Length: 434
Ligand SMILES: Cc1cc2nc3c(=O)[nH]c(=O)nc-3n(C[C@H](O)[C@H](O)[C@H](O)COP(=O)(O)OP(=O)(O)OC[C@H]3O[C@@H](n4cnc5c(N)ncnc54)[C@H](O)[C@@H]3O)c2cc1C
Image (cartoon, rainbow, N blue to C red):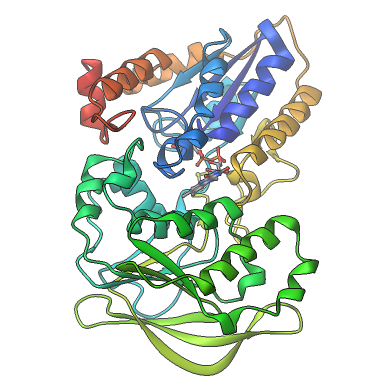
């Protein structure tokens, strides 16, 4: 019997467990360990609540957990409840699938002012992540700025723009829905260092901005390259740029405005007691395709500033770290003897949910090469972990516990929502009767 521990129950963790279960069949036991009592990582806490069809991928992960050889153990923080060294002693291989949940910082003056937050915090707040349930973002101003030109920036702009009715069928948490309904923000500026041809925004997400009830997107015609230049773009980017061209023609006939401010590099945030404006430098594209400052400085009024500029993997004691990449140092997923990483913890924060599948399968194949199926049972595996957690008084949640929590959330759902998420440990433990 072989024993594997996958740390993290997001897409990368589940795809890796799926691959290991297929490869080893009944000759392995796989534990998926998460610090939160509930599974699925960014599927639950990152993907936008009004994108339920994307969140439905979790049904596939359910099947993995129900397969008989895979266990889920929530409420177990690796690095706190149990160390990497202890896990490497207990299991034939330990796979870190801990994602990249920390916001990258802007590194500009004024970043600490109230009203300036990272997207991990804001997204976690509206998705019911326990670490951010009390965030209370400042929605009482007239203007917001979103820094970044990727899909997370679009999610944030859309969530700030929607009416209560437009959230029907979503699983946005009640505290966020109520606060957003009371928001006085009317202008949302999306700031990007480069231009329309350099965006990392998918056509579907961008197109959604053109169909909001009370908000209209706007692009400056002068920021768009001549239409013929679009011919060299990848088809996906070309479609996205076509949306931007439509936005440049859109009628300004709704009360909320989403303005795209291209070629603008944040240099400071100013305000007396809280953020009042984002100071930016106008940029141009250099010969290498990177942005170059022009020296022209101007201010974008903003009382709420949300940076969507990428994420980093938190360090875990004893695991080598790639400072530049903001992830674990690894070679094709291998960190060291018996220790691997997958997903965002391996590659950094890029790609879609689906990108994590080949990633997890590749690392599982490498493990299969290094750890042949065996009749022997040298490692203590899950039984050893259970004993260790019991000695420390750590009560892990099981997949059945998750089912109980899920059922309680569905039972508590508002009429127009699939569930009412429980957002903190106390609520989870209450439902479980702990
Ligand atoms: C805001 C946002 C929206 C997105 N929307 C989409 C979308 O619409 N479509 C799409 O295809 N992709 C989307 N993505 C990308 C997608 O979510 C990622 O590709 C994917 O979640 C990465 O998977 P992962 O398993 O590496 O990390 P994660 O999903 O982050 O999972 C990591 C898991 O590890 C756990 N963990 C962390 N540290 C520890 C520890 N020390 N001990 C135990 N457990 C730990 C965490 O609790 C978490 O459950 C989005 C990403 C973000 C940030």
